[in-house]
Image (cartoon, rainbow, N blue to C red; front, side, top):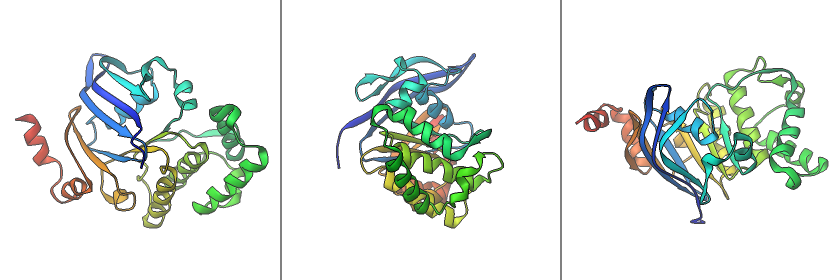
Length: 251
């Protein structure tokens, strides 16, 4: 496994308006690693995901974010995407009128530029990824996220991940709305996509981590990472919840 450093977040403080949400986050992710970020609603998990992707509503008041040693904050969101940063949204937006097949092809071209596959290569990759995710070919003729079930939206996000081949994937609650079979399928897609990349999975629950075994688990409480460990930390949270950590964080 490569030890190449992909992402380093140092003492990150982030506010939206007058409200401080992240209060000194430190996180380092290397190539080939899967990290899980766990915590209750409102702890700042999605804020971190949005900041990494360059959402303009959030203000970084202190700290740094380095991507392959470069200042990520100097890059526009589209530049981050082209550089290999991928964000799967917690609540994907529907785009009526834009067909899935066209969206996928244009997205891959936009992100990969001159390195994008030929039309024939793209079709082969698309067919293989759809088969792996048990997605019917008719799916390509539907409009992006329009009328999709929760599970379909999440499978579509992982389909994008498999085709775009990012260097780091930030997956915001990819496990929401999935039944057991879909969970396993999505997990297989994630595992296949991080062989030469890295992944940050944001979740409330252990269940997806049973199929995507993380190398590192972090717990975010009140804008700070208060505990880090291996998969056993996720198991402890499943059994004990967050209260024991919250008590320590407030002490």
